[in-house]
Image 1 (cartoon, rainbow, N blue to C red):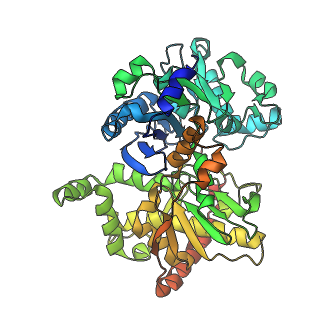
Image 2: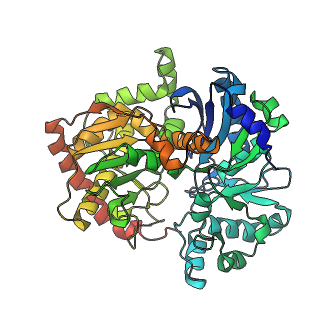
Length: 509
């Protein structure tokens, strides 16, 4: 679909300008409306269902994303005049392929990035054609698994999209992707700016079914008549290509200073040290974890129906109720220690982003120390503390690889950072104050920056970021006596990791 530039200029000339952003996370979908000063005007969000046909499978239904997003857009656009929205853009989880026909109908469940069915195929691609896959969760092995197990499906496939591309396609009728998502697929030649023939030929698919990579800020289409009727948007609003959700880390770095530790608590959590130079850290300064950030949601959805009912009676959300329960349990979770590797681990032994052996698909979750006096609230707190211990293990590793570095404070973002009790655990374990940016959802804020560029309101993504006033707030200070207690329990955490290493690095098939 070709974009009508004259209509875009007309919309952009309006006095009030708003950016509609969409985020398809691994755990939650959300729609957030920002004004041209990047202030949040309205938001709506819903949880995303996950299906596990086998314990190591992790599937999602793209149609549910669209059902969620339609509802969320309808909620959000009531807060403003939809004619004043100058652009729509989306970000989403990476690595997850969606096979669609020429009408955009999904032909197979989405294999979300944590899905582990392709571990052996990942090793095969690495060894046979010597094109290293970025993760054991990469896109190329997933496509090959689908092809081998459903040989006729590829013949029916019009395009293979990534999650944000699927939602953008439903809004604009466009079939493409961005260079950021393409780079994470394991089958893209970044230098050439095109799909890697070596990998594509080995997988055995035509390049024609792979989406054309475009710039994230590029206006690629407009809201269709059908999408307008389903969402309450106005037909013809510009729609940009969008990007993978890791773009939000650029805003986290912008809010930081030298000697900060950035801690992102999303499904795929991350810890990153900002060097004295302030330059974007590489390799040994950053660790990306597995699914630690979504384990509380898994526990809530599978084991906490009684808590949900009690929270409802008290007029609380289930999350607020569980957080208060965890706070009541206190430091140490009654002696429980949780290893949070529920779908493998991307920072095994705390290893940093580019170290050999950091990707371990065979690591699994462990609850140690259970006795009859423990309840759900003890386990829930232990899950949160397990993530903190893994983050601290990564921080120790970063320090060991960069002798002499010290951190002055922690800046944390992502959905999990909204839980103050979790931030207190981090502060106590690290012995550092923990701050959050006023706008926690930096993924959608990054998309707003892209829309600002597409609308001609900013010269570049970097210049848009510089316009954002997102001050740090709500500091949580460490409780000194808890630091020593945490360090003692952390010693047990490390010992469990070491003693179980042989089991945690071996396939249990």
